[in-house]
Each structure stands twice: as C-alpha cells, then as structure tokens.
Length: 501
Ligand SMILES: *[C@@H]1O[C@H](CO)[C@@H](O)[C@H](O)[C@H]1NC(C)=O
Ligand SMILES: *[C@@H]1O[C@H](CO)[C@@H](O)[C@H](O)[C@H]1NC(C)=O
Ligand SMILES: *[C@@H]1O[C@H](CO)[C@@H](O)[C@H](O)[C@H]1NC(C)=O
Ligand SMILES: *[C@@H]1O[C@H](CO)[C@@H](O)[C@H](O)[C@H]1NC(C)=O
Ligand SMILES: *[C@@H]1O[C@H](CO)[C@@H](O)[C@H](O)[C@H]1NC(C)=O
Ligand SMILES: *[C@@H]1O[C@H](CO)[C@@H](O)[C@H](O)[C@H]1NC(C)=O
Ligand SMILES: *[C@@H]1O[C@H](CO)[C@@H](O)[C@H](O)[C@H]1NC(C)=O
Image (cartoon, rainbow, N blue to C red):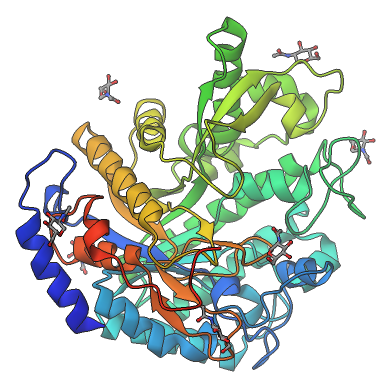
C-alpha cells in the first residue's frame, strides 16, 4: 500500500501544481486545520456479545427485523491494529470514533467492564502511537438496552446522571490521551427519527404521525423530551469536564448537530417563511439553547406546553456548554410550507415539508457543495461564529459498485473546497472528517456505504481494499495539490468481483 500511495503522491505533485482554480492542497487551509475520517463503535466493532458487552438499543432494533445486523460489522474489535495501520499509511491525522457505552458499562450504570476498558485503551494507544489524534464521541446512538428497559432511556431525566457518570469514567480513563470529546451524535436526528417518525432506534412513535408501527411512544411529546434530556445530559457532562478534568487534561468538548441545508422549494413568501421556520426547528432546536440558553421563540409559540422549558439554572448550564460544534452534513433539502390538518408532532409543528433537492434520494446524493457553505455561513451569522468541526461529510455509493469511485472523489473534492471558501470568508471551521474511513454497517443494511476502503462483508476475514477515493484523500492528506480530475489517473484497477452491478 505505502509504496503505491507514495508514487501517486509524487505524480500528483507534478501533475497539479496549481493550474486551475478548483485545485487546492491542505496548505491552503489555516495552520492546525485537521483532516480526518470517521467510524463509530456499533458500525465498525462487531463482537457484540464478546468480552462482557451487553446489547444496545441499536442491537435490539436490528434484531427485531429481517436483514443484516451489526453482529460482526467490520470486525474492528479484532482487526483494529490492521485498521490503524491503514489509517497511518493513508496519512490520516485524526480519527473520529466512538466508545460503546454497553461495552464499557454493560448495564448502563454501575461496574466498568475491564475487558471493554482494555479494548479502548489499546485502540487509543494504537492510534496515538501512529500519530493519529482521536476525536471521541461518547454517544453514537447506542444506548445500553438496560436503561431503555429500566426507564425508557432518553425520555427520563435519570438518563442525565447515568450519562454523566459514563462520561466521568471515559474522562478519567482515557482523558490523558483524548483531547477532543463530543458528547452526543446528531441529537436532533435521534429525537426526530427515534421518537417522532420512529424509524430509528429506540423506535418510539404514535399514530398518525409515525412512518412505522411502534409498540410504544408519543410523537407529540417524546421527541421534545428526548432532545431536552440530551441537551441537559450534554451540559451536565460539560460542567463535569470543566470542574474536574479540563485544567489537567487540556482538552475540549463539544456536541454535534445534524445539519441539512434548506432552501425554499418555490419563491413564494410562504415557502421562504417555512424555510426560516424549518431552520429554527431543525438547527435552532439544538443550537439556540447552546448559544442563547433557550429554544427559538417560534418553537415555543407553536409547540407550547409540549416543549419542555429550562429552569434558570438549567438555562445557564446549557448556554455556552461547548468549546466547539460538530457539524454533520450530507445534503440540501427543499422546504415547502405545509398546512396540515393535524397539528402535534415535530414534523407538523414545523409546518414544513422537506424533500430532496435535485435528483438526490435517501441513498444517492447530488454534489451540492454550496449547501455546506450555507450551513457554515448560517452558524457564523446566527450563532456567534463558534469553532466548528465538520464531523461527518461524505457520499454513499452502492456497496457492490466499482472500487473506482470517482463520484465519491468528485463529492469530497467539491465539499472540501466549500469548507475552504467558508474558512476564507471567516467561518471558524477547524477540521474536516470524511465519513467514513471504511465501509460500515450503515443504517439498517450494507447496501449503500461511504467508505474510502471497501470491506467485503461476505468474507469471514472482512478483507479491506482501497477505493480510488482512498488514494485521492491520501494525496490530499500528504500535501499534494488535488483536483477532482485526479481521480481519473488514480483509479484503482477493479479486480474481478467488484464489477459494477
Ligand atoms: C401524548 O401525550 C400528550 C400529553 O401528555 C397526551 O395528551 C396525548 O394523548 C398522548 N398521545 C398518545 C398517543 O399517547
Ligand atoms: C493545551 O492545548 C493547546 C491547544 O491544543 C496547546 O496549544 C497548549 O500548549 C496546551 N497546553 C498544555 C499545558 O498542554
Ligand atoms: C400550520 O398549519 C396549521 C393547520 O393548517 C395552521 O392552523 C397553522 O396556522 C399553521 N402554522 C403556520 C406557522 O403556518
Ligand atoms: C461572507 O461573509 C460576509 C460577512 O459575514 C457575508 O455578508 C457574506 O454573505 C458571506 N459570503 C458568502 C458567500 O457566504
Ligand atoms: C439490500 O440489497 C439486498 C441484496 O441485493 C436486497 O435483497 C435488499 O432488499 C436491499 N435492502 C435495501 C434496504 O435496499
Ligand atoms: C468476498 O469474499 C467472498 C468470500 O471469501 C468471495 O467469494 C468474494 O469473491 C469476495 N468478493 C469480492 C468482491 O472480493
Ligand atoms: C492523466 O494522465 C495522462 C497520461 O499520463 C496525462 O496526459 C493527463 O494530463 C493526466 N490527467 C490528469 C487530470 O491528471
């Protein structure tokens, strides 16, 4: 691997010495700007019932229906050394990963699992030994099932203390190695998908709002309660970190927001107002409390009593409880005004319908880099221009399509250029993490994956093979000038079996 990448890097250096305007290198970014890639525990580790790990709500969810599971996934639990080596060879400076709560504290609260602790220490040491900075997410959608069973997980305030105690263990045990902590992955998407529409774990919802049939839930109230408790758990964790660890460990802590960019479907006044409202509902739901200590006015007005309120003390706790914002961005949505006869879940409260922009679908997404610029500019102008890390951005492709993934290269090239434009226009974006380092167990199946590396999920060895995008990203990481055209000359030869389908 290494010699091939090396040759390509040299070649690129000659071929693209800043000729056209879509050509850039990492040296165009501010000093210290981080380029990384991401994985998450459930999607990568497998080994779901090994060494004391107990089920999470995600395990329960995938086992409740037909189709593939995350039981083995990439088998990262056993292959982490090999994977860290691939990351090192690629030139990765940072890895976004998560810690599985039910592996570290299997019952959600109480005793630490020594084998889980050992695994994460080994993994983190392996990364730092190779000069790869870990950016750790504490909660990536994998709540211990025990807490869901005991009190309903995020809809009960008891989650605040349990989450804070889990974070305490992580800070204490890993804080000498980890300098970048993210508390919760995409809280707005978890609350909407998991407690209103119901298609995500823990599958809470109620008719007539839901997309699926759920055995429990209340789509009118639970999304708001769940998100409220996520914000309070985040804020409580942030206070703990400041009081007990920050001075000693010199790290920083943030939270993420799932950020579609949104544009009006038509130029009608109604659609424009609906777009503003949708931004307040979807982004402001998380960002407004973090920056101003309360929900947006429009949400308070429309949702009324169903929206939990912050006490003065809670408001102070939540406000400014982050050192950086993690942004998760894939695509742009069209927003249309929605007059719905039913009023009473997150979607209908928003009075807006979302549809894919252009030819995008749920699993195939267009290259719309201005959408990422829109998000970053919106955060800069409306939320005080905080430090931002893009913690996920990438393009899915059919898992069985060619290793020569020029479409992914085109996307990454355009979106990283968009980040550069935003940074040049004053956004405090400090890092970019491509999603994902390798093909992972993606939402519900392995059909559409985001990896720079192909993973053969039919192979007991889970063999990894670089795609063209891996070579392209490596060229960027190692300092070459890159253009999307480079992909044509980088293409990996597709061995038999990878032929596009
Ligand atoms: C949801 O909760 C609200 C407020 O407690 C209640 O009025 C409503 O009937 C509940 N809906 C369902 C489907 O349980
Ligand atoms: C703390 O971190 C900052 C930024 O990462 C670094 O510049 C500084 O030298 C560190 N200080 C200590 C005492 O480690
Ligand atoms: C949302 O739709 C309902 C039902 O049609 C309507 O009563 C309400 O005025 C709408 N709200 C907004 C902000 O458009
Ligand atoms: C650049 O920043 C300025 C000042 O914040 C803003 O007015 C302008 O719209 C931004 N340009 C773009 C392309 O976002
Ligand atoms: C994934 O692909 C398999 C095999 O091609 C197919 O049977 C299944 O329906 C697909 N699942 C989804 C959710 O598209
Ligand atoms: C994946 O692995 C299986 C089992 O080893 C093998 O038969 C198949 O050819 C492999 N597929 C690819 C695309 O390499
Ligand atoms: C690709 O390689 C060919 C032959 O080596 C060269 O002529 C061409 O300029 C290269 N194009 C790009 C975009 O690198």
